[in-house]
Amino acid sequence: MATRVSWLLDSDPALRWQVERDLLHAPPEVWEATRAKVATEGFGARLLALQDPDGQWAGGAFFPAGFDFHGPEAVEGAGQPWTATTWTLNSLREWGLDAKVLRDRDTAGLLDRNCRWEYDDLPYWGGEVDCCINAWTVQNGLWLGADVTGIVDWFVEHRLPDGGWNCEWVEGSTRSSFHSTLNSLKGLLDHDAATGGTDATRAARRAGEEYLLERGLFRRLSTGEPVAPWVNRFSYPFRWYYNVLNAAEYFRRASLLDGTPPDPRMADAIELIRAERQPDGTWLQARRHPGRVWFEVDVPAGEPSKWLTLSGTRVLDWWDAA
Image 1 (cartoon, one colour):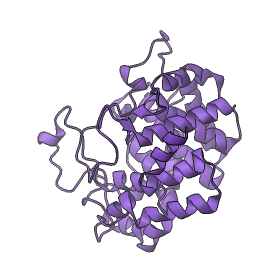
Image 2 (cartoon, rainbow, N blue to C red):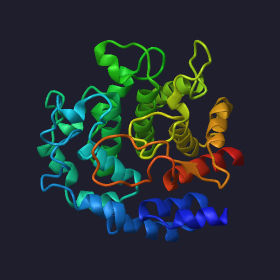
Image 3 (tube, rainbow, N blue to C red):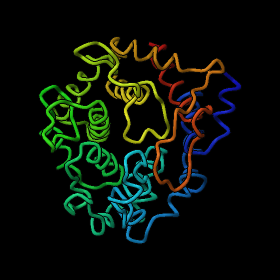
């Protein structure tokens, strides 16, 4: 354990402060000092330096400016670019950047004035029709101080009859998606954490959680079989992709917010996570999701990942402590 923690601590501030807080349980003054370095050192500082004068990154909301939706980057398997505004804000938020840094730049106001969604040219903080995109907009808006109340209400209104969400609802889908439901839940969790939530948002979150829990986080309700091979294929950054580690991280955070114990229906999913742990206590990167990036923040496929090891260790610590 000591060797593994030393290895984890030898990392970017964006990761190191989380090791100090979640694995070492260091005093707040220790991990907060490390967290403050996200703005001035390493990954966080590099992304901050790439912000455009109009508040965006790469000139676009979800895709870079000038992205060719019919070009080589858009073909099956090529992977979408991960450089535009939403993806960059997601990274900075998840890495623990102090929101004040971007608030001092009036980032929320600049995006309100200058950034439009590629879908129907809709205003940035109003969201669009994609559940995952709207969830990230809720999270980033709460973080930066934008008014995202309308999108929160949208989630309550667009929950499907089976309890979750599906980004393809606009094409007529009436069955929830593991991916869309998890990302939607993350947005609602951040809303409830920041505001206390409402009866409606809490009910929607409970229904979405139940959708995943009654499937054990990875099984088909109809057959009990794993829904797909990707359920235990762990990759960092998680992006929009579902796997049981990504889902367990959500339920760990929800448990801490709500003051509730882990749900026993997660037991088999936890064992999938445990099974992927290597003899030295690390987790391996399964793959890098294809697509253009500003720079790499984790190792190539097959190598021990510090990000996944942090995530896997704290999930198992949370579960085993209960």
